[in-house]
Length: 146
Image (tube, rainbow, N blue to C red; front, side):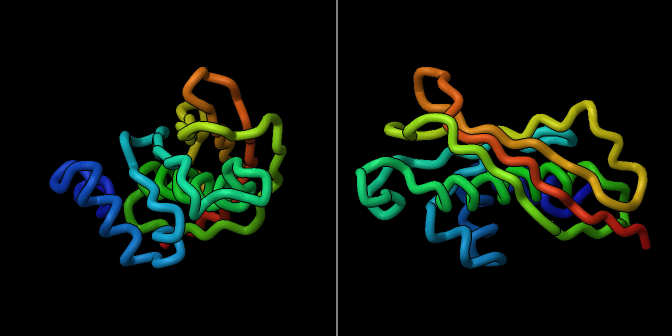
């Protein structure tokens, strides 16, 4: 079992999320909360708060990128074989609608085969409280086996 998955199960969402922000401090800039984490899936809550706003008062595109990288990275980490490593190599994003509420940022990679090394693309979507998709990211992860 992934070290992060074991920590999530032991600590719960709030404390785990605080810990992730200490391991990778840039994530603390958006105060994310990992709500659900399991192989092939991660859900992150991104709060609509002033510190993540852009000049028009909506959630900034880069805050959504940050949350997407967290969700995609956690999904990859808990899905790859034991001893494998990963690192993001690139991200292609689409800004679909203004993000005016809290966002549910979801990486559903249940159909991805994480057992092979190399480039794996994970998709992450951000949805507002009405279920409208505001953002999509395809993140290229480079997975290396030990």
